Image (cartoon, rainbow, N blue to C red; front, side):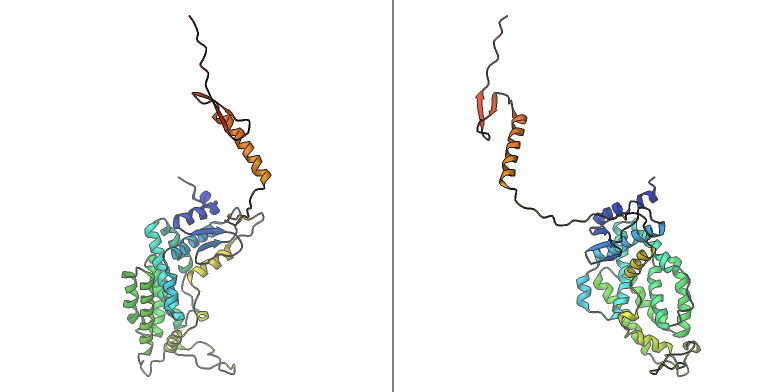
Amino acid sequence: MLDTRAVMRSLPLVASVLGRKYGVTVTIGGTEAYTDGRAIHLPALPVDVPDTFLALARGYIDHEAAHLRDTDFAELKATKLTPLEHHVWNIIEDWRVENRLVAAFPGCRGNFDWLIGYFFGGKATKTADDPAVLFLNWLLLTVRAWDVPAIGKRRDTIAVRLTKLCPGLLTRMACVVEAVRTSCASTAEAIVHARAIVAELGKAAQTPQPASGRNPDASQAGGDLDDAGNGNQPTASPWERIRNLLHAQKDDLPQEFGAILGEALKREAPASDGQPVNVATVTHKASSDLPPDDIAEAKRASTALRTRLAWPVAGCDRQPDPRGTEWETRPAQAPPHRHG
């Protein structure tokens, strides 16, 4: 059996092989982990790296390769999603392309399951009291729990909290989210599902709530700041927070999974005491015509080589012409007749 640890210590070679297998380019060098839409870049590595970093690097390659292979970036750009729609689409598309890669390369399943458990398997924190944050976390964990059921406990904890703040919200959202699982075969279909989820969220947020329905859990200690910076102002109600989410800008929303992975790689990369490991990349090499003297020397050398390789030939004695480049063919002399 192969020593997995020993194989993974040869990550530059592994990355190159994975790239060819997945049909993408993988390079190692510099200090950042990113993809530019054509290639996957990993930071330069020390010769000896810890297991967590190796698992992150392998998972990052698999995740980004899945996008480069199967995400239709032209379709995404043409659709012009709102920031929230794009965020929801990314949650769906991450799940979709990863499963597409697993169908082609089943060994990737273990890498993805490890990543999901590593990033999303922790306990829910008490700081997540914002209904907008709770909803996005619930959606993310719902989709990820389709492959890793163990994180369903954290999803359920968040669902209980969100239901107290916004009764009935998740009941309305459950069907439109579950539809993703049964019909999502392309980037275009992922876009359709993302828009449907955001549209249903908007309908739920606009549904009239009971007049006395302001939940005591809606307020956060200290309240919000008013325009003058004074504290103790009433905070937005839970449903108002959901309505505000519909108009959120990109900077108001959580990072996409690929960016989280890239930052984790940079954070977990061990310091290198020696020369880091890089992968050679293809570059342009300048060339020019050979000077006449070099061409003549090459011809003389090749003539001499042909003489040694081709003479004698059966049936004739072939000798180089004294002029240097032509051959002179002479009839082979018959061997002397021996008399008994």
